[in-house]
Structures are given as structure tokens and as C-alpha cells.
Length: 159
Image 1 (tube, rainbow, N blue to C red):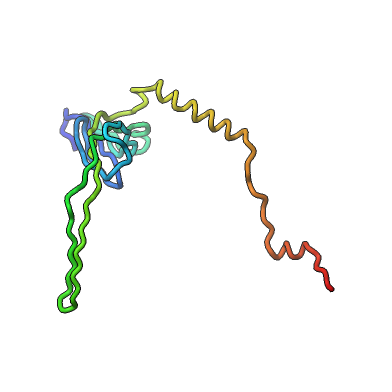
Image 2 (spheres, helix red, strand yellow):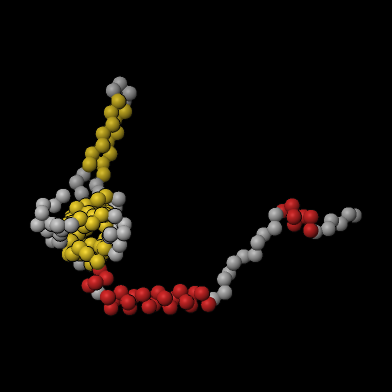
């Protein structure tokens, strides 16, 4: 935990792993689909702490996020995997390198307070699309009859 009077820190989840970050930190996470220089928002925040208070839990962290900038993409160190069984002529050598993305943490907090006008503009096309979709008739298929019911409904002709 941070020391009293310490800087703002947060715990975020990216790629199934948890990272403790502060503004200005640089971290390596699993590869993300983003161009270098792009800014992204990490919405899965588990904890936010400044020197005095700590916020944990779904209700306290509602709307909180961490803003980050993509520095670049790189590959991690090579990991060698060796399997050997004596007297069986089994020797297997495999290797792997992780694809990573370098991020720089820009800020911690709610993204809504910083850019309310942009968020409102983004919501308007989404609402219009939902309203337009509701006006269209649905393309639901009619319910299919079971094979036994369909056979009973059609009279059989005997020759």
C-alpha cells in the first residue's frame, strides 16, 4: 500500500494480469491492438489509492479509469522449454517469445470529468442508431413445427 502522503496509484487489469501503476509509469502488458502514439483507456480498475484514502469495490470505482499512451510494441525474452527422457531417445526443444505492448500511464481518475462534451457527442450517434434499429421490423423466423406434428397435419394418400 502507498505511504501516507504518497502519490496517486491504481491497480488495473490488462490481459488477465494486474498492474500497480501511477501517473508517469511505463509498463509492459500483453499485446494490445493499438498503434504507437495512440491513447487508450483501461477501464478495469480494481483499486485507487492516494495518500489518505483507498477506494476498492464496484460501487466506489464506478466510472473510474486509467488513461495510457502506447509507446510501442516489442517482444519479450526468449523462454526455452526442454524435455528429456533418459534411455528413450526423447529430446524436445521448444522456445517462445511473448508479444508485448509498452504503455505510459498518463492519468488516473474518471474520464468523464475531463471530457464531458466528447462523451456526450459519442453517445448521440449510438442513441440514434438504437432508435433506428427499433423502427425496423424484426427478421425473426417463424417457429418450426416438430417433425411428428408436421406429419400428423398432412393427410397421407394411399394408392
